[in-house]
Amino acid sequence: MSPSPDLAGFRCLQCGNCCRQPGYVRLRPGEPQAIARFLGLPLPEFMRRFTRLTNDRRDLSLTERADQSCVFLSPANRCEIQAVKPAQCRDFPHKWRYEDCESICRGVRELRRSHERKSRARKT
Image 1 (spheres, rainbow, N blue to C red):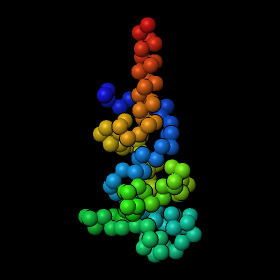
Image 2: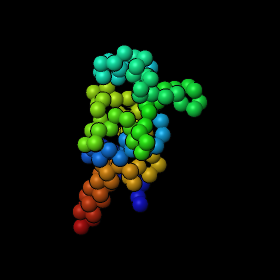
Image 3: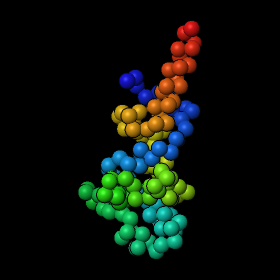
Image 4: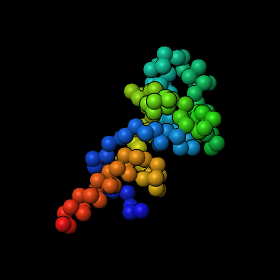
């Protein structure tokens, strides 16, 4: 597979695959408060129900469901906290991505195919 394409023109296809990957969704300062406020929950209740301390004990992370999907991923592949989702989520795949994010992200895969089609068309 060729390297990830330039992501200019990337469009999220809302497949939810990035929200099903195991690992931390680290919360930056202010994010727990914003999410709690959005959900209408007191901060301590939000933290008890939806966060955990990372193993290095440096950060809070959103919890996952038993299948390792994000606790805020709806059955319709929608982020239930879209308006206040953590920066780590907002930044994917532009500011960070998995080494082989094309295997995970349909939007990146479609963009790569589009780049390849355009490249072939220029050669003809």
